Length: 73
Image 1 (cartoon, helix red, strand yellow):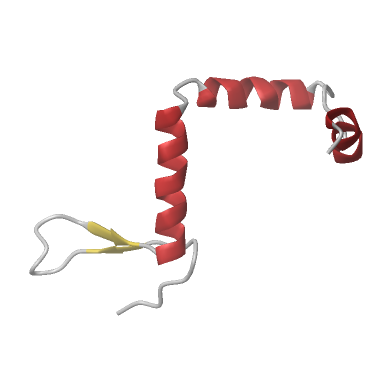
Image 2: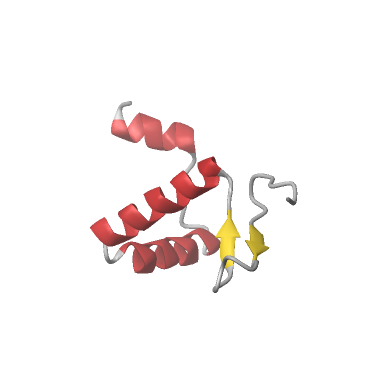
């Protein structure tokens, strides 16, 4: 069996499997599940992330220290 490392999925197909399968690290799988939960809970999250990326590229971002100060955290 191939060495399975985090972030490196392994595609397998054998005599028992009729369809291809993917093996991933357990932590990676939990991360995928968590990401999908967030996406389904907040359907507009992808468009919000794309908009945030555009704003970041335009320089419309503030540093962590300033944000903490503004939020009084």
